[in-house]
Amino acid sequence: MNSFQEFVDTSSSNSISDSKAIINLTPGSNSATTDNLALAQLSSPTPLSSSSPTTLSRYENQKRRDWNTFGQYLRNHRPPLSLSRCSGAHVLEFLRYLDQFGKTKVHTQLCPFFGHPNPPAPCPCPLRQAWGSLDALIGRLRAAFEENGGKPEANPFGARAVRLYLREVRDSQAKARGISYDKKKRKRSQQQQQPSNNNSNAS
Image (cartoon, one colour):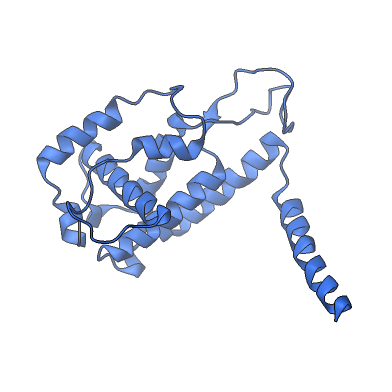
C-alpha cells in the first residue's frame, strides 16, 4: 500500500483472509492482557511490501498494522466503504466497534465501585478500550492517512467529532475509575521543574 489508491483498491484475496482474522476474534477473549495487545490482534499481518530493505521502528510497524486494520473494517462494513467516502462518523463507529475487544474495566454510575481506581472485588461492569489506547491509535491513523496520499483537510481522523469523542471518553473513564488527569499533569510538571531548580542551585 504505497498510495492512497492502493489502499482503496486492496485485492479481494487479502480482504477474504484478513476479514476472517477479524471475524474470528470474539469479545472477552483471554488471549490479550492489555488494550494495546487487543488492538494488535485486530491488525492484519499482511505486509505493505514483500521486501523491506530497512527495519521499521515499533511505531511505524504499529501504524502499518493499524492502517491495515482500519482498511479491513471498511471492507467488512455493510455496505462496504471506500476510504474516499469515510467521514468522522465512520471513525467513531470504528472506535465503538473496538470497545468489544477492550480490557479496561469502566464502572457504571450504579456500580458501588464507581470512582474507585482499585476496586476490592469483581463487578459486572463492561470492559472498554482505554482512552490512552484510542488516543494513540487515532494519532497513528491520522498520520498514516496523510502518508498514503490523503489530504490533510479531508482527514477523517482529525475531525472535530472524533476529538470531542476522545475527550468525552477520557472524562467519563476518569470519573468511573477515579483518575484525575489534571492532577497527573500537575504532578508531572512539578517533577520536571524540580530538576531544573536543582541545576540552577548547583550552578
